[in-house]
Length: 118
Image (tube, rainbow, N blue to C red):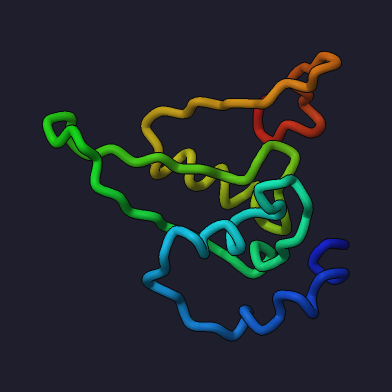
């Protein structure tokens, strides 16, 4: 809850916005990420975003319908995200691949911080 309260002035104007249906790729990051390309946390709009859908033409039409679902990072969930993530995985996804960037000093899957794994 703390990030929501602390950064409310930075994203509160978005809470009353109607859905936005079309933007260029250059605007996406500021609404779905916390960090800029240099790793500096400068974005807080993601706290007001409920869902993002990005459509693109897949070059191999013979494969059929394919979609990539990118959920909040493990341990990076906000209020209600855990329940929403489990609902999406159970109802809308046929295959899940969990990826994690390892810590250079060593890492492991942790049942207390890695949501829904254990």
